[in-house]
Picture 1: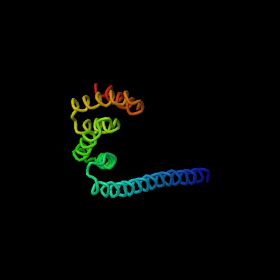
Picture 2: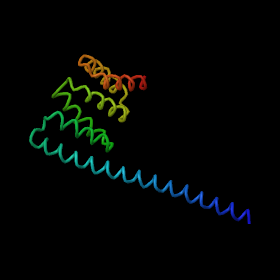
Picture 3: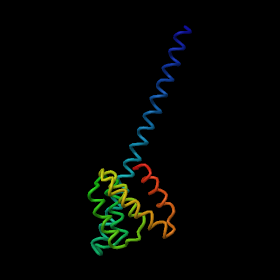
Picture 4: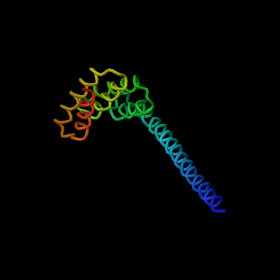
Length: 141
């Protein structure tokens, strides 16, 4: 009888464990779906702005961010080049471009982009992007 009781308790504990795993998995799936819907919403908004003004830096940066999250590295790089052409002092664009080039395995280009970005961010007092770029640069070295 004692063994049966322990077996029953173990079974309940096992079910509890699997239930928690299932809840965690469901929560992750729901979060991923919410993220996907948010990316689609943002993409639509940025595309509307770009139809009006193809050189809009914020919309191009937004499209680069959407492309980066979708792992469309070449698209992200093209949008970021537009941003930097239009506004060479847009420090976070250098950060995202460096990350994009790293993902594309363009390490020398990423290092160059990050070095430039650090100088620009430091001159403007943008310490958070400058610090993050320095961390990435240290990791690449």
